Image: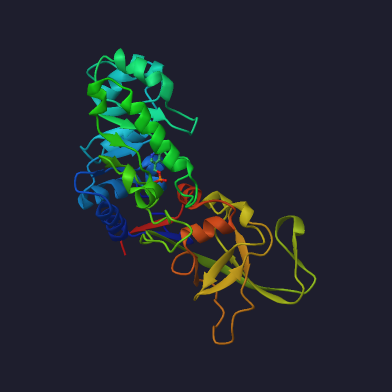
Length: 361
Ligand SMILES: *Cc1c(COP(=O)(O)O)cnc(C)c1O
């Protein structure tokens, strides 16, 4: 559900038209025979499945991936399309998967054993993550004893966001070598390999299905180059108070910032409880009319203080009630992630639950 959050000092705007445009841009990268599944785990990377899934379905998406069964139920509530759970098939869960028409991704021999012949499933081959997935050397034996054929054979890239890593090509080679060693019927099963970065960098791995996530939500799948996707999320926050800190005074918890001169400060009603990581203390920026305002001192749970005194003379400083940009035209989700010492994925999946959410533009 979308919490209306009356009088919230923070607004998250989700541009569903941009989300749909990103889906279409990814579709344009692959042949018509390749299905563009949408990864909507972690509540559609923080955007909200009740908004993202219908928008993606309207843009053409017909297959969705989540991490947990509980997430699959939330997606099932808004779509009749196939939904696959990346996290495997827990013991005793098969009847629930079948009842809700949820497809398990089978990651281990135990998962395969737990999966009844009449529950459609995906086999995940680990080609280098060492996280989940069948070991390549085990797949042939498992295939020879299989009760039924999987819908898809899947693998997942470790380093496709890295433009120069040779490991992605090596993973594709391992996957193909593994499949080539399987009984004939298994060699005809469609493949699902690429995440967002893989879609843009490795057309040889598009195959029959791709699984983009972050690129749909406006993260840059090719970080070394300009972002080919449209931004989807904007966050603005209202100034609760403007004050003058005097030379020699300190700002915030633990007095980590001492003012060298009298400084105009603005305090906003957003903090680490809203997903703005404490690692941004003293270094990240918010933007006022395109100009950066540095965070002064510690990010606290519900509040951040920024300096607003060094704006150009042509830019009148903001007042109480004015809105500062956290993510928007001057600070992308990737840029904010970098200045918080993390990545766009973590920024989005940490989006505030107590902000007002505005859908569409
Ligand atoms: C999260 C995930 C994806 C999507 O990855 P992005 O980098 O967000 O495009 C695809 N496949 C698997 C197995 C995943 O866990």
